[in-house]
Image: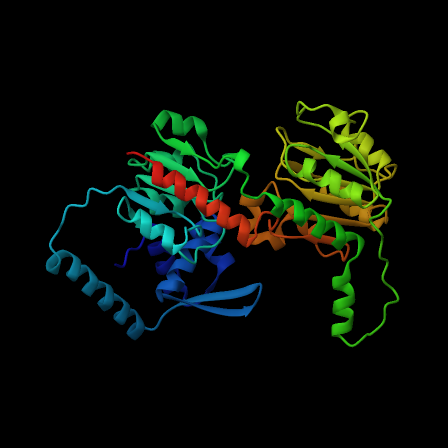
Length: 412
């Protein structure tokens, strides 16, 4: 059935008045949040009410569909409403409502096994991150909600989800959820067991994909050949063997990559910022070093995992006096000084950087190209990827199985 929020109605009125309008102008006239307006208008485009005219990647205009098309949309949904209210007898459905509120959804065979237990609602085709308004609209009458780290879930949002009893995050982390609010509202939280780490080798392997992309950027040679230049000269490839590597953190991925690096003949130095209870000798070093020492003594520094506290990568660590030239930032819990990084790249002190996990992801996802990362992202020796480290077919199969088990074992 056709349902329009107040925000959608306001957008339609503005476009009807202006005839044709850009997203930036629409945001200015509504006074709303850009990501929220973008989400709302995308829904209207999907419904066929709004037409999208893409002039270029940065120039998009919106207008109303013609009257005949709008008439058909209204007639179609009016008929659906008639069928629901007049032709289908109202029946009692005592099954709790299970909502997959974002792009994440279990495979069809698993959903079928849960159909006897839940009334299931999914939203296929949703982008990786959603607005807070979308979460509320989708979850306000849900008993159980499944989310995949797609939005910061706040007290104000949970307060509008009166029926919500259980929140399942298809992730190890619960950092995006207001835990105190859940406790106050009696909402149980289920997250994935880190001991059954569904990511397993996925993130570890991706670290090496990134590392070799920095040392041996073969994609540059492939692009050169694509335009007709068949020549191996001009590429500054480095060998991993013999490099001194600094590893920050030994919870999971950090611990896993150490023996592999040694197989390549690397000297490995280790920092243990979370004070994991393990003896240095167990990891083949005489002592754990401060992070600053890794910058001063190693050629490559890798941040392979998340930490208990935010680590600030500022001038006290990253400066012209450091030995480090290559960096891998694969952690949500890093704060990067991008102005300083840019200066060090321009001075050629930094040879290459790879970034996969980004702390400010919820703030910049919908408009990454205008974020502060634009200061460094266009350098040829900077590789920024959209959080691909965990994402393999095998890791998601393990993820689905764990979420299915949680939902199957819930008692309401």
